[in-house]
Length: 431
Image 1 (cartoon, rainbow, N blue to C red):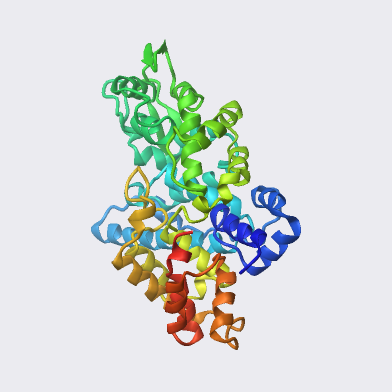
Image 2: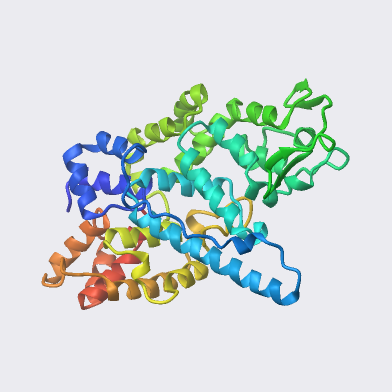
């Protein structure tokens, strides 16, 4: 069994990033736990693994005026969206800025926006870059930017909001899912807030702007306060609400540690610090340094989502997703119902128990066999079964195998099948 520090670092890397490579753990042991947290959250370091996004064809920004042109445009957009998924998966695996990338993944789920409706790869990429560039700073500035983001405005129909017929979609999700949560606002608050966003528009030529003729400058009563609120002022009011501090703290704790509600003691402990400055990186640091983050409850407290599971496999086996032949990565994510840039709803993806089923276990195992077939296994090839069990556990950051899992892995026979079996054990999937 690995020493306690190494196990804690493996846990840290799979929660604050997408998994630890052997050299990550070696460097982490030399630094110590606290210094490794700082390393993961430091955005100033040079990052040779930060591969640039694919060049998107400008033709996808042009309208099509014939049936054939529309068909070709649809095919081109589909290909570019597929290219974006492949690029992001590759970046998750290769980037040394693991903390920033995992946080961008969190924000993609938090401000869930789907390419299926937006239908513009350029806007989806711009939003993705926004999460990466601003996701670690102030929650206020980030939410203001998201509110004016082209993909979000198309996704939640902000472009249809006008003073005569206010569209409530964005105002409702801003309250329910992005800032303060259910129970902290009323339908009247939503209706009044929607008026504040009337006239907001986004188009390719001009970006964000406000159409004064469609805006509503009148008095509005929101969360018990009355004024001629603008959309920016509504966002500011919501993100600085005590309810928002609790809501976001609970959601980030759930992302990194284990499920909690806004009334959990750890949220009560961390939320006031976040409320004081709304600094996301400081809150994440507090989460990763909290004693409960490395507790047994946290270390077995989450089921890996398919994207996290897949990216972790590639990192821990020192592989690139692009090494796989054909479209196996995309096909697997499709079968597991999680493809980046395509969340199922504005509520994002479900978590934990949703990802455990007989069907998903079979898909995971089929993918694990394909990965193992291409992995470099010199680190276990010559070992006996007992040594392989130990080496695989260390490589995958598993504390120890249960007797049942150890028996299953051993019974798989040769090294590649043993590794594949290990990749679908509860110890690896639920950690």
